[in-house]
Amino acid sequence: MTPAENAELALLLEVAGTPKPGNVDRERDFPNLRFEHFLAGAVGAGTGLRSAENGAPVGEAFEEAVAGMSQQSGGNTQFGALCLLVPLVTAGEPTPDAVAEVVESTTVEDSEGFYRAFEHVDVYVDDPPDGADEFDVRRGTDAISAIREGELTLFDVMELGADEDDIAREWTNGFERTFWAGERIAELEGPLSGRGAQVYLELLAREPDTFVAKQHGKEVAESVRVRAQEALRDGPELIHAFAESLVEDGVNPGTTADIIAGGLFVALERGVSP
Amino acid sequence: MTPAENAELALLLEVAGTPKPGNVDRERDFPNLRFEHFLAGAVGAGTGLRSAENGAPVGEAFEEAVAGMSQQSGGNTQFGALCLLVPLVTAGEPTPDAVAEVVESTTVEDSEGFYRAFEHVDVYVDDPPDGADEFDVRRGTDAISAIREGELTLFDVMELGADEDDIAREWTNGFERTFWAGERIAELEGPLSGRGAQVYLELLAREPDTFVAKQHGKEVAESVRVRAQEALRDGPELIHAFAESLVEDGVNPGTTADIIAGGLFVALERGVSP
Image (cartoon, rainbow over all chains, first blue to last red; front, side, top):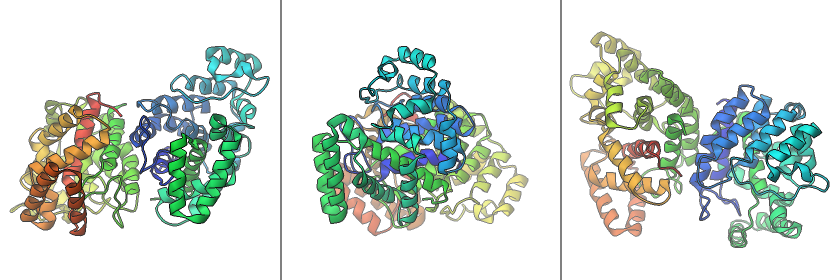
C-alpha cells in the first residue's frame, strides 16, 4: 500500500473500530451522521491524499482532501483526522522528525489552503484565543487577508490554537499522541480496528478530549476522562454503559478519534496490516 | 465522485450492508475473513479502478485492481465484484448498452490479464465446462497459451462460463441483474448500505446463487433461494435465523453479494449518494 492508500485505510479502520464511546463506529450510527458518511468521506479524501503523496503543498492537498471528503450529506466526518494525515503522508516516512520538518516548513499559502478548507464543510469552531480575533476561521476571506498581512504560516496558525486544540498541539509537539497511539496499536494483537478502539479508550483516559472541552466545557471533558479510566479498568459492561451515556448527553470525543486515525496510519506505515 | 471513486465506495457500502446472510457484513466477521479485509481490499483496488477510468484495457485494469485488492491477509474479498465494476467504470456511463459495448470489444490481451489476475489471489474455481479443459484458469500460463492459440477474447471466455457462473452471465446478457439491483437500490429509501442488504435478499430469493451451487451443489443453492423467499416474507427474526444457519453450514452466496456491489455502483453513478 502507498502512504495515501494507508491514510485512506486508516480512516476506514478508525470508524470501523468498536466500541468507541461517543463516536460513530461499526455498531453505531447517529441520526444524521452515519457509518456510511465516513466511508464516503474516506473515499472522497483519496484525491487530496494522493496529491500530498505526490508532493503538493500541505495546504493545497488538505483543501483538496476536505473538499473530496465533503461529497456526502453527513457533514464533517474527518476534518481533524485529515489535519494529521496530510502532513504525515507528505512526510514520506512515519517518524516524528520527518513530520515535524513538514509542518515547520509550511508557508502562508498553506494557511490560505487551510482556511479555504472551512468553506467546504461546517466544522465546529470555538472562539479564537485572546488577541487573535482577526484570524478567526469564521471570518472567511477577511481572515485570509489578515493571515497574509501577518505572514502567518500554517505552523504559526496551529501554534495559536495549540493550547486549546489537541490537533493543533500535535502539529507543535512532533505528533506526540499520534505516534504514541501508533506504537500502542502496533504492539497490541488482533484485528486492527479493534486495536484502534482499545487505544482510543486509553487515550481518552490519559487526557481530556479538547473537542469535548470546546463544546461542553473543561469539567465535562475531565469527567469523560475519569469515566474512560473506570471503563478501561472494569471492562466491557461499563464501556457499553459509558458509550450509551455519552450518546445520551451528546458528548463526542472527536479529537481522540482523529488521533486514532493518525495512529492507525503510523502503524500501517510501519508494516502492520489487516 | 468519479466513477472509480463510486466503484470503491460501492465495494465499501456492499460489505457494510447488514444483515447479508452468509456473507461478511457490518455485523459479522468470519474467523479468517473479516470486515477489515474488505476495507483494505476496496482501498487496494483503487489504483486499478482509476486505470479503468483513465482508459486502460479491461484485462490490464482488472489485473491491477485484483493485485491491489490482494494486499491483505483475508484472501479473495472482491474478485467477482471487480469483474463487474471494471467494465462498468470503463463504460463511462451507467447503461446496459455502454457496458455491453465494453465487454463485447474485449481482446485476447484482456483474457490474458484476466488469467494473470488469478495469480494474485486464491479464487474458488469449479471445473471448466465440457470440452474447455485447456482454458481452465488453474492451468496458469499453459491456459494463456491455449487462449492465444484459440484467439479467445475475454468476452469469449465469459461466454464459456455463462451457464454456470452468474458473473460471467452478467457479461453476456447486458449486466441484467446488476442493473436490476441498481434500479431497486435507487428506488428504495434510507441508508444505502441497508438498501443493498435488502436487495441482496431479494436477488437471493429470485435465483439460486451460482457460487453456492459450485461449492455445495444445485440443490443447496435452490434451498437457499427458497429460504431467502421465506425470510423476506417473514421479516427480521427469520432473516437472523437464516443468516445463522448459512454460517453454520459454511454456505456463502458470494456471487449475489458481488452483484449488489455492481448495483450500488449503478445507483451511485445515477446520482444516489450517502
